[in-house]
Length: 178
Image 1 (cartoon, rainbow, N blue to C red):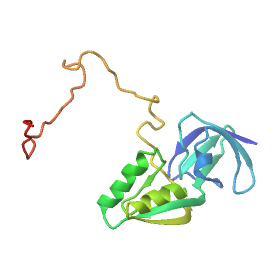
Image 2 (cartoon, one colour):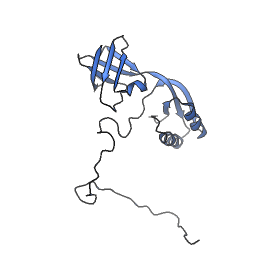
Image 3 (cartoon, rainbow, N blue to C red):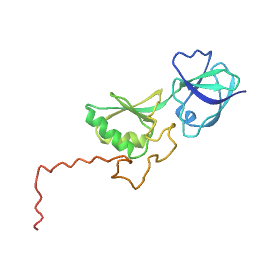
Image 4 (cartoon, one colour):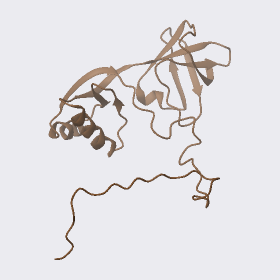
């Protein structure tokens, strides 16, 4: 069995082997699979890293195995406007749904309850078989995991990062006399 501990990237890399994986398997840091040519492989990669289309698993023996996103059952959301698509992304994001975002559609792993919610917002949902490549998220691999900026007590000093706040006046007045 081939064993991989490293992920490499590069469109120009040449390999004779590939492994087709669904999103659930691409999330696993320790997993076994079978390449398209029938070779067993096990990978042991850093937790939190999600394999994506075009990544390569580098085996201890030197082989490179290209990751291919498998076709899987997904729900693809189409809208009449960017605002409608943004609203759907907001509501799906509030449910912490892994979400593929494109300028023409949103895509998530099929879930009939989510489909009904999105349809209720007035959008079109198509259940189909397609590769699923969700956004990596704000705390993706490459970060130390979790919340990563410092919270020192020098917020106003030149040493710490400054926070710029912009106050905008309201266009209407509030009458607080009841």
